[in-house]
Image (cartoon, rainbow, N blue to C red; front, side, top):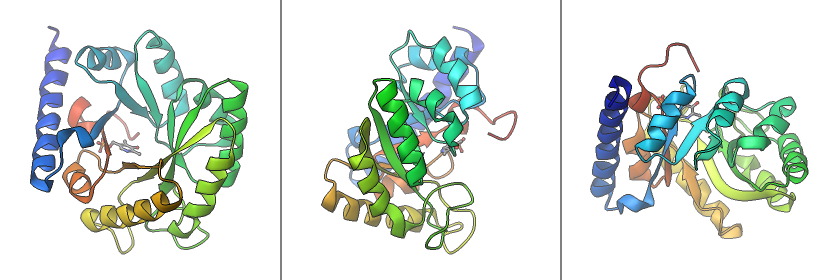
Length: 239
Ligand SMILES: *Cc1c(COP(=O)(O)O)cnc(C)c1O
């Protein structure tokens, strides 16, 4: 075992224990929550080690970083999630390797993703990113759409060739009424998810919670947590 492998294995075990405890505390089965490891800023060699350690879901937030990494790991069976703010000029590249785009937050992006998916003969899962701190008609500081636009976007995804509506994603807001209130934020997201599932029963994925607040997300009912730092270490630069 290399040192890095030992380190990643230990971190992964710790995160696994946190998820298992959070599930137990919430009366949920461990299998109801999927761990996505956010590998942004870390090298393809780490992705390879994580795969050896059993990780099958990884996430990236910048195409420049993600595209070469995904190419270097093309031989591994991995599900790639894109979780960053996405410009339309990057969509074609992202649609080449991403299986799920978690940061869908405007109709223009839906249109571009659909065209790229069709062109690449791929099906892309889509999560609508909800900005709990955004006012009607605005987008959040960290991306995402105001809650009152969820349904319109959901309908757009549902109607778009090559796209599959999977559910909702959020990042706990740093400002506004939910700042520092992760559990309340995630509870609110779950309400929006219930409403969405009324019209789109298959869109049952709820992506919430990161290294600092995964317990809150599991308690609220998240189906997917996105964990970077707690597995890979503190990032060398802001990602
Ligand atoms: C970086 C990132 C994460 C992981 O954050 P950590 O605090 O490192 O666990 C999760 N979600 C998104 C959207 C991210 O950009």
